[in-house]
Length: 62
Image (cartoon, rainbow, N blue to C red):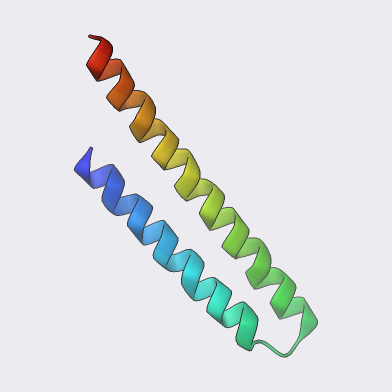
């Protein structure tokens, strides 16, 4: 499960980097692209965190 948490941290870091690029971009299409990437990476991180919680819950019930 530790490896999954590492992946969450990597996804969050990538999302933060995309947000920084989005904020620095001057072209509207690049701002939109990096905004979508930021949101997508955060959703992926949320899903991995949910999987971790579900797995932890299943382990506790077993």
